[in-house]
Length: 363
Image (cartoon, rainbow, N blue to C red; front, side):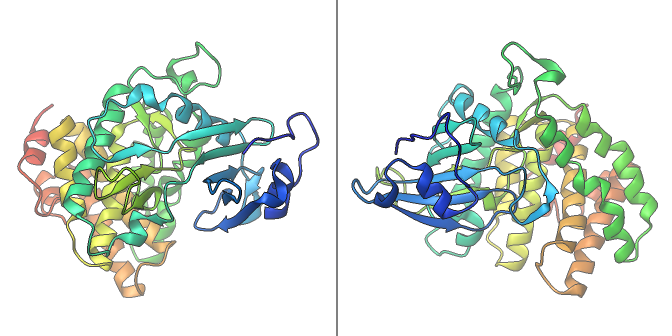
């Protein structure tokens, strides 16, 4: 769909009615408001004349779920930036995983126009019997390893020619430290020494401000993987599309791996063990490798996620959440003490291949 509102007063894009006014075809469009996010306004739009379906994503200067919480709209500029350049960072090694395709971006409206990659996330579709979780885990890990390997020199700056630390997404860098800065609240609530949380934030949380290895997706978890069970081209039994790139930033690849492994662990634990964590971790280490410091960094990020986010997002009851916090605390203590046996014996590495132990032994 084309737009005719550039340079004119914009309608209110926080409503379907406003988006309908924005679109040039107006009444010829069917608009569905999409949920599932907390930050932006998301719509699925069908052009009734052509049958074409696509998605629009609008960033207001606040969270869509909480208008009191101000949120820099420039986040949408960074998402458009990476999606415009993502083809440079993908070499086709993954068979059926790709980044969502950008169709258009209205800078003034903070409105992203992207392809419709399907109605279900991997989290929602996880128990579907036709999904080969091992194949999905392998392809996602291979795709992620390629992103990390090919983006070591890629700048996220909105200014051409700016690189290094200035070539980053400062919004994402700031937001991504939230779980580290607030870990103490989860530990206090569930009876653990908060000094551990403060030490983790001091020794590892601060690294998020300076880590500059490669481009990270920034919010890589099954909820940001859209699943289409019957791809239009019919080449593969499933098509996976990575969405929600506004928190992309330069950092350490360990955080993308740790976050996905944490959410995979939660899915396996509460939605039926299908081996997503193990298969993903093994595939990533095979495709990219790592060393001791990287493994520790990944484990710390995994543990912070496990100890913090289940206290904010309902997965289980209080007793079950207590157990999750205990698991996270155990890994964090092992990481601080350099206790590989204790870390390796945790559920994070349960059942994984020997490559992880070999990686830890490398400097």
